[in-house]
Amino acid sequence: MTLSSPASPATPSVRIAIYDMDKTITHAPTWTPFLLHTARRGGSPWRLALVPFAGVAALGYVGKLISRGRLKYVMQRMLLGKRMSAADERRAADAFADRVLRDGVFASARTQIEADRAAGYRLVMATASYRFYVEAIARRLDFDAVIGTESLRDGDGVLLAGIEGENCYGPAKLRMIEAWMDREGIAREDAHVRFYSDHVSDAPTFNWADEPFAVNAHGPLRLLATAKGWPMPDWER
Image (cartoon, rainbow, N blue to C red; front, side, top):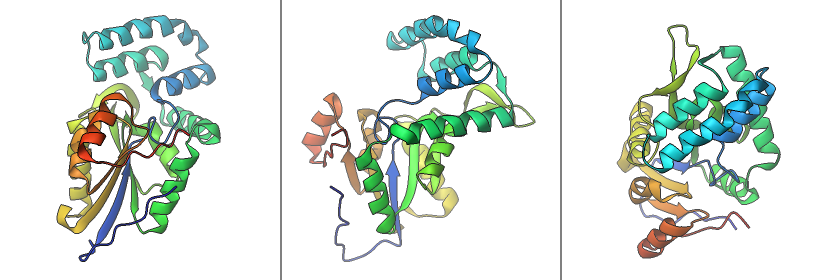
């Protein structure tokens, strides 16, 4: 079931539908599957032997011993190496995006994306995942823009392990959305914003949006959405 646009006496000049990606549009998180898929296909399958060590780093994050950004660096360094050429980056992103689009996207997410596009919304993906591989997924879903975690690059633009700037997560995601709107010349008062996410870490953006949708809500997000009266569409069915 898709969502109808609300009637408004003063129609904003810009309609924007912002979607989180992992477990909102996709069935599962994508970062670790991307790393494993690329390591298997990229000529360095020996790196899969390092997976247990990456698991130790993940436990460190769960125990609050390392940051989410540091965890991303460690996993990328182990499974992809220190650097990745532009050609390898494109091949890896396209191959993984093809895999995700085959059977990894919720049918109801596709339906809602199409409905928002038909209603005149600009489609924006805002995700904590790295933009360098998310763009290939977003392109296949006909999104207009991607806001994601940026990667370190050398002077020649070669992809390095590590984050450039902020991890696009929690309050940082809202800051990055607002920065994107500034670059696009879109004033907040001139925009009507829908926001879809499955995770309570996106509470700042939920509260900022005109229409927040707690998609596939579980645990803390379900409690928050119930208290706030936000719709909770279930795209997992």
